[in-house]
Length: 92
Image (cartoon, rainbow, N blue to C red):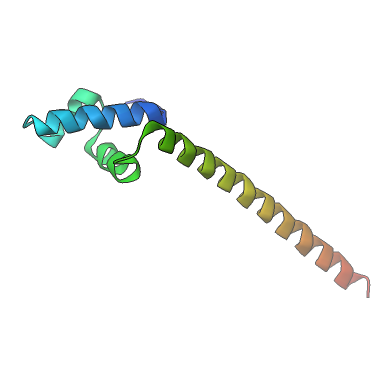
């Protein structure tokens, strides 16, 4: 089975569709098959996006990307600092 990336809008749409199906008496397994995801993916999506609106999900993804970028910058600075300290220690 190939891995597919879903946008937050698609995920929220599928979760809403799943909620409707579940309210009509379908099982989680049936719902997952209909929306084309595994049970594990469904439960992960529900815990991450459950109750969110599309604009909130977009904002969450933006913040996650920004957080990753900032973590990378901090890591690079820490490495630069360690190199400078090592170089300075060798000069004495």
